[in-house]
Image 1 (cartoon, rainbow, N blue to C red):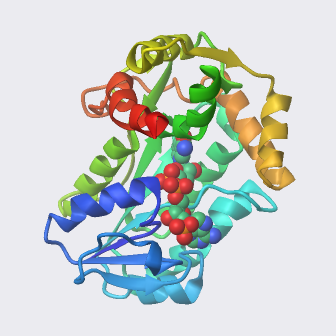
Image 2 (cartoon, rainbow, N blue to C red; image 1 turned 45 degrees about the horizontal axis):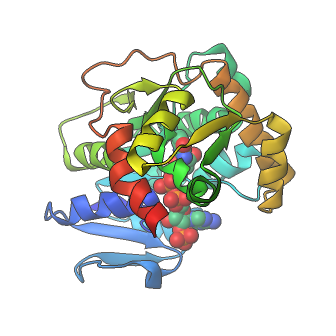
Length: 293
Ligand SMILES: NC(=O)c1ccc[n+]([C@@H]2O[C@H](COP(=O)([O-])OP(=O)(O)OC[C@H]3O[C@@H](n4cnc5c(N)ncnc54)[C@H](OP(=O)(O)O)[C@@H]3O)[C@@H](O)[C@H]2O)c1
């Protein structure tokens, strides 16, 4: 039996639809089960937050494998609390309930100098260490920035023909579609042959600059789209405006600075770490319909 956390999220939803078709027994943890759409009746739903000890102990009972995804932080006292603190009850329950395998969504950066002060990245790597300390068989899927992050700027792309980031305009970054992350997670969750603990980079098919992405978007959307690098303070103001707590705002800024210093560029792409969806395909199939409404 496979337990899926964050089943209403971007990766979680797509993961579930792959797992349903496998015939494997599935249990999900959802804060609000009414948000679960098109879920077959044989899927067991545990109501609550996967940061809660009672909830994860109940959910992990009899589980062979767990898909672990910490919600992106919005209000927290520290990045450590948001990732490691949130995962602590699950780490205990993994041991108590004898879970065999865990697949966790994490971030690229291990081994780089910048990763020590990289906000969400530093905390994600510490979360991986916590999960590894349980002795469970573990695959940490290590991610660059998601293509799907650009959906948050669909409105401004439509209205102004621009998108913005504090990331460098001319550095090539890997980027991955959440559909491909879901497919890699499903592959590991459904296989029973792997053991031990390892990182699995999930890198998309190519590295691109933001200028190259803007040019692709112009072609796909049939109108001029430009990219502008914004100062870190502008990002911080924007995030604070969304109601994020100061520690979270700082965590995002630190992460962006670390990406500009190369945390996403340290792993060399191999056939195993390459995923299929190109930025152009993603823009045509996901962003364009979102923009056209
Ligand atoms: N975006 C990137 O570029 C990037 C890069 C590397 C790693 N990551 C990692 O990827 C993860 C985000 O994945 P995603 O984009 O699929 O997430 P997402 O679409 O934002 O979904 C978040 C999920 O978390 C649930 N959730 C939110 N707050 C919660 C809480 N307090 N307790 C329990 N559940 C809660 C949501 O459920 P409700 O429906 O109940 O709200 C939803 O299922 C994060 O761990 C992030 O660090 C992201």
